[in-house]
Image 1 (cartoon, one colour):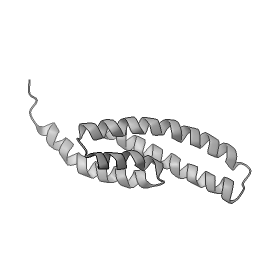
Image 2 (spheres, rainbow, N blue to C red):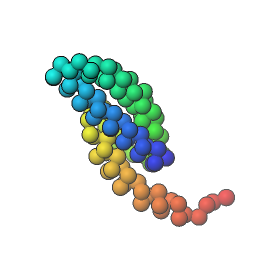
Image 3 (tube, rainbow, N blue to C red):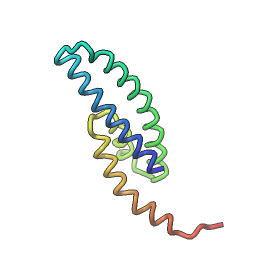
Length: 108
């Protein structure tokens, strides 16, 4: 659960940074080839952001995150580079809890 969230956080973050750079190239520098790049990366980011939302919501609900924190995790995929920082913080917070739960005896 944490791993799939982390993967999607990085994928979403990288695509958003690429999209931001592409928009700067397209609108700021009027580069000819940037339009196709922005379209392709924008579509990929849009669809993969939906997958990110599903995984982040699943993680947040299973970890019983407060609503404000869950909202911040969900919105991190829309702010360039925020996904990297939020992912790191969430991972540091949840890894010890997951390790502790893994050591608990399984109740039948």
